Image (cartoon, rainbow, N blue to C red):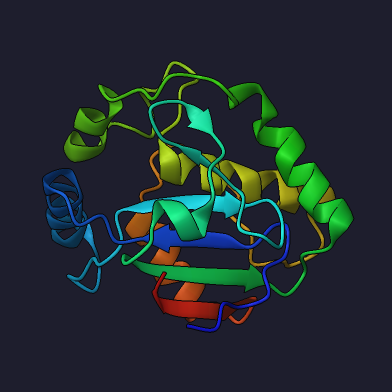
Length: 177
């Protein structure tokens, strides 16, 4: 497989083949406008080699290609991404690095309460969306950027659907890692 050239600030989604991934996709599909959900996890790419930042057991880094070998992944790039925008996005989420994963918040996502009940703890998709909020804030309110403007309550399917429909995002890769 030819791997794409990655850039800091690219974002990704993965299809979790385990039971939790299936449950997440079931709940997301039930709440989705298009009644579909394929991806159940998201994160941010930090470098051209595939280092990521994502909410696992803690918010940490790993290698995309090694961690998701054989799994389906989607990688996207916002057309407005540049080193300054990327740095602003990372600054927005840096306080979460090392935080434990708030598994209890999955129930709030299921119940539709995650937007309001969070205690400043974020799941994977909220981390990715909060990165985008930092990017959007850097660009300013007068510049349409395609980046998210909110993050609590955002699920992986929300991000993927938006990425695939937005004129501000290009698909860099979709297939098996």
